[in-house]
Each structure stands twice: as C-alpha cells, then as structure tokens.
Image (cartoon, rainbow, N blue to C red; front, side):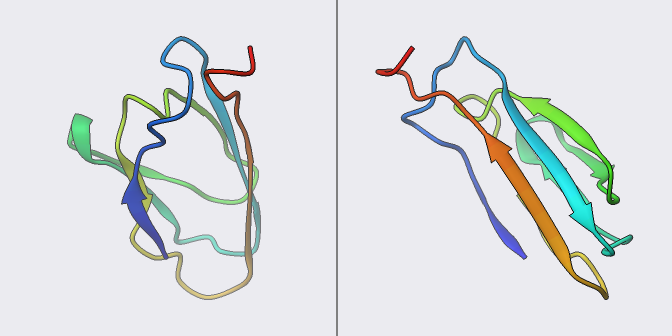
Length: 77
C-alpha cells in the first residue's frame, strides 16, 4: 500500500516517471483529483505531475511489487 500523496517540492512543470515492476498483478493506481483508478500491473510506465495530482496505491494483491520513481525537484532544474 502507498498512501495518497502529492509532492509539494516537485516541479509543477515536469512530469515524474513511475515504473511498476514485480509480480503484483492486482495493483491499482488511484488518482483522487481525477476520480480515476487505473490498472497498474508490472511493466506499466506512467508519467504524472506529482505536485499537482494526488495519487496512491490502495493495495497490490499478492506477490512482490517494486516501484521506481524518477522526479525533478523544483529547485534543481
């Protein structure tokens, strides 16, 4: 489980990259601000404005899950 959050220090102009890996085939990416729930199986790549959109993963079912996140902080770029 990943609690719903957004990153207030992220750049509002740069998309953050999320990559789902592992064996957790039942993962759901919940985008609260959009009222959307998206399937998030292994191999999924999502670009998101982390500062703008509140998001979380309520659960991922059985199996291991790895999420890699690549982001740019506002004061860095």
